[in-house]
Length: 320
Ligand SMILES: Nc1ncnc2c1ncn2[C@@H]1O[C@H](COP(=O)(O)OP(=O)(O)O)[C@@H](O)[C@H]1O
Ligand SMILES: [Mg+2]
Image 1: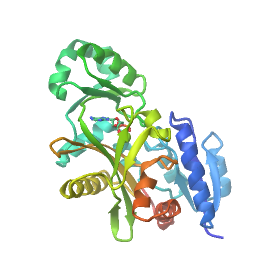
Image 2: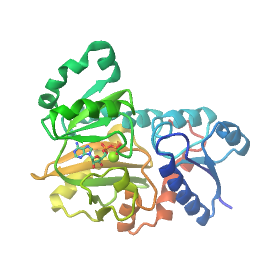
Image 3: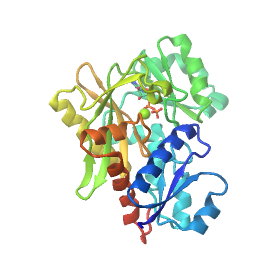
Image 4: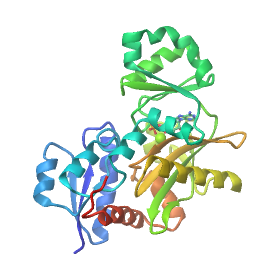
């Protein structure tokens, strides 16, 4: 039998159900490849279980808070167990859209204009009296309002009119302590996955996303048939080249490891905008990374094995 891998899934994040679906598929793939697999729903029993079982590595199939924000990574560093995906710093940077976008701007990676407003700025400093300035600074309507730290489009609203801004902000701030107001880019949406390999980061074919409702929200992400996907994307070769370059730059800039997935939009002029980078991409039946891999003739099992081999290669080193 091969190494013992604990698959961490579920937990208390809002993306619990998505994570359970990812974890189930990852468990099946690792089992089929001959690993000894320990599927674990993350509860208060996690630490004693990991100490008793001493897995060779953890596969992080968690999404959202605690799984992607550095919390579980910090804990596994402390326990000395290697894990899939980036270390604490990269996890925390990518998870905070506001911080990640600032790094994109500094590195010359195009990201839509935006502003970040914290709940404290409203509560303590009267930020609500400056909402009239928001469209001017963030690039005009339509805008999108989203929590700074969340996934699966939860708490996200597309805003067409000034009078709807306050309610959208309230909704986003019920998910996180800060909200982004960002210019909505009209165009084609792409998800671009990067897998680390023996020759460095490998960019998989971009997946083009067309939600039938016009909004790639939670329902469109996880309900089969609600969204059309095109792999490879229907793009000019030079746009594809730009997208692939940007995905690699984002992966390296944030310090991603093993796998990442950048979400981008291409506008009518062919300009590419990076929205965000995910460090624990979904692995469900409708997820984008497995779709991209398939277009490169990599099976789901191949992807899972590639990702777990990254964690196993860090055994005996101080990861981070
Ligand atoms: N600025 C934007 N322009 C166009 N579409 C956007 C923009 N921001 C978000 N979206 C849409 O909302 C979805 C979710 O937003 P995203 O920034 O990826 O956050 P998350 O996936 O973490 O919830 C995107 O996949 C895209 O469909
Ligand atoms: Mg996204």
